[in-house]
Length: 332
Image (cartoon, rainbow, N blue to C red):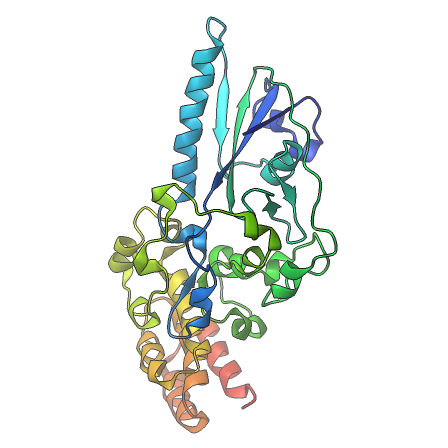
């Protein structure tokens, strides 16, 4: 736990959210994985899910703990009245710069917070209050000449140290991006179906990290490396049931199965081709488009051309037509 107060740059000024704020209490919750977070990436027939998303939604977990602490602060302030507000990645609050100034860690070259004690595995939360707290000293940058995180990025999303091109970031593409993933980036995504931990996992400061102790954030066994064959066949109700209470549910079934189709296409396993063929009949064009790309990578060109000729006759969605044409025009 750390405190900071006094002056802020406008882009990080918490008083935009709470005009009477005099202090910000910045906190971090360790979610260090129990095993190698990149193990699933090496299993072509499985989906790789970011370590933070393999159980409950951290927004709910962290916010609950912040509310408990806020109640304690209010009680401790008696007989004086205290106002508090809690935030967990849900408001225009620059948590990482604030956490750095509060001494929790520093923003590494991958733009994420790095802690000398917990490495890359911290969820951040903030409590704004009208009480005065003495500020802790800010943390210094300890990245030095290391560029492990920059070199590890599968899509080259770092044009320079401390700069991230979100348009190439797998976490953005698989979670926030609502349309089809750009063609040139699909092969680079591999089997990452929700988020990406590569730049976090390779950080040398993780040698000091410890396994997280919050049971609600511990990875579920069925989400460590779920088989693509099972995920590809999820309908909406099954999707909601599987990811109930977790962060994956919020992107919806179509976006998720789109990601699964990209992973299927990257698997290199012709035995998974029937999965892509099944999804050509999916009611959502986002899924159908990704299925076209996946199928083109798993069956011979002649067979794919025959399937395309039949499908194009009845297809009316222009985005799907473009997927078929792009797949047919792709080099062998």
